[in-house]
Image 1: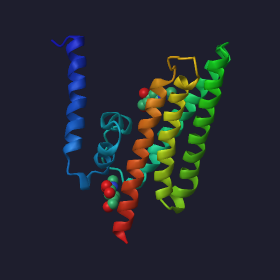
Image 2: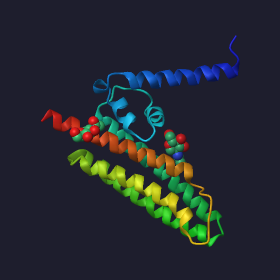
Image 3: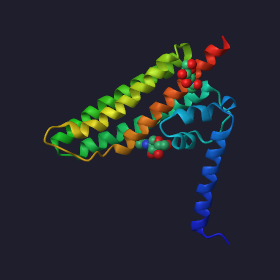
Image 4: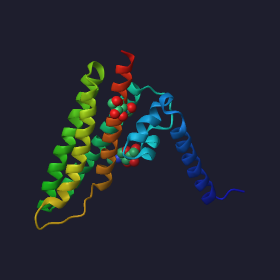
Length: 184
Ligand SMILES: *[C@@H]1O[C@H](CO)[C@@H](O)[C@H](O)[C@H]1NC(C)=O
Ligand SMILES: *[C@@H]1O[C@H](CO)[C@@H](O)[C@H](O)[C@H]1NC(C)=O
């Protein structure tokens, strides 16, 4: 008999095995592991992509942008909610600044999807990924910036997730540029 606690540890062992075997697959035949291993958090990367290695660098890049856009828009909603709820003026300032950072992340991601993914240059997608990482870093930093006011960030997890998505986009766009120039 399998108890519920041992079945859940069996489940996570299975996930780990899938991750390890996916990372060990020869990397040239597995763009997914090539991208994820270069991201800031390979485990997170493999989990959000769903462990299906049969995707081209182009598909991976497109999917990474989509996932980042969805994530950023969820966080934007969350910031609006926090903004409505707080009466603290310092916090309001932080939330407005974070909204700006998330808006700029959203803008470059849309641009990457609508223009650069279709027409190139793919290096602009790489740049978009870097900007997304910076946006998440700056938002997180705002919580420490106001003089005489130290606050625990309410967006740490969100900023961390956006930062990882940014690093996935950088890695995917990098692989995409490389695979395209190799064909020429
Ligand atoms: C962003 O994506 C991650 C990974 O899929 C998920 O755990 C997290 O809840 C998402 N964040 C939001 C705000 O939707
Ligand atoms: C793409 O090529 C550059 C230059 O050769 C290299 O530094 C980089 O690691 C490659 N990226 C990937 C994802 O293979």
